[in-house]
Image 1 (tube, rainbow, N blue to C red):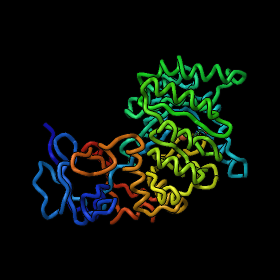
Image 2: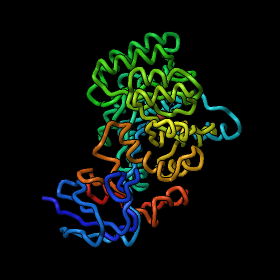
Image 3: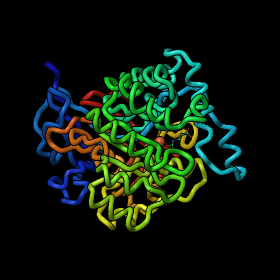
Image 4: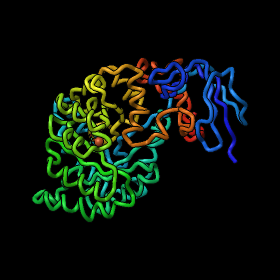
Length: 393
Ligand code: NIG
Ligand code: FE
């Protein structure tokens, strides 16, 4: 039987449970404590002075505690790097997604062990930065064998794995896109089926068309997979309307949205996932979270960690960029990086610290969550806990 743990002397506890604490969306408590139960769940939260006994006791000395970050959009399993492409962009080249093939070639050539070890190093970086759950997509294989290899490796790190065979058309199918879509919807999805919870498509300028996107989403739905979509990153387009039509769980990027797109997302209950690392790394205009939030759309934040458009593992940096560049308050950005991102993964067991939630949290070397945006560039995460176990710090 596992021990119970009392974490006490929490200067500010962010529960993201509005039934707790100050009644705001962050459910804030001061001078608080929490108890991790025997199953790694939150068994109790409240005032430090009223905390029950537990087998072990950890005093965090007045620091803030926040739910662990949920990085709901990553392309974490890949080989190689594309810093030359980044430097060219900073000198004025636009981002087109064309560099995906560079990573596909490197990934196909890499061994399983190379792919696993590099992904593991990125996961370790994420844990040290307070991330406690992540999603991982395929999409740098684009052949049956490599897509399966990527997903089998990804599966060791998360249950939220996503088949993204429709990330780009590989060179061997350049003259026959329809045949590639048939491969993705048929044999490739069949081979990846047992390794994934999700199906995704890159629906954008220079990527997949509306009809191609619908074909892949239909195949994903027929296979009883949950759906998410990359869209509206590179320009206005059909992504948001298709996301609403299929009632996908999340539309990711959302950089270019019309008012009608925002209404459609809201009415269909689609989470809008913003990936400000991509705008940062491609020097593109940032999305406007204010329009989404004011319309009543649930917003999530994630890193989009990938070697092309956002080689970033830091959720605190996403929070800082979201506040500075997309017009979110620090509270809204933290909520988006935890509960919002969990909702985009159809998960209610994580992303908050209510009773019964998984005890995933970060202890910050700061008196309040506002410091996440106020002190960009410093790693304020002093400890990371997953399922009640201290994994960092
Ligand atoms: O989410 N938008 C499409 N795919 C990735 C980037 C892929 C790459 O450039 O390697 C993204 O930004
Ligand atoms: Fe992406």
